[in-house]
Image 1 (tube, one colour):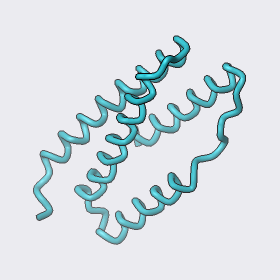
Image 2: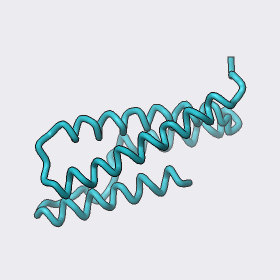
Image 3: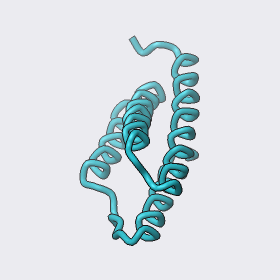
Length: 110
């Protein structure tokens, strides 16, 4: 739940920043995001809510988010945007470490 709330809050923060800078943010997630969320739900149901499989998916998503934020931070950005992305990047890194810790404490699926 914390993970879900963070990404919802992060998206709203980014949308507010886009508006503050005079842009128009996307109101809804992309088809890829919707498809991925649906896939995760179907996979969880099909695998009997296998926590290891869910953690694998979450870790993959976090790795992608961490890389996207790191790429964005290499750009020349307004200071308020940089600060926002730095905070989000740090949170994703910490959460990624937490998920990794949960995965290593679980018995192997293989």
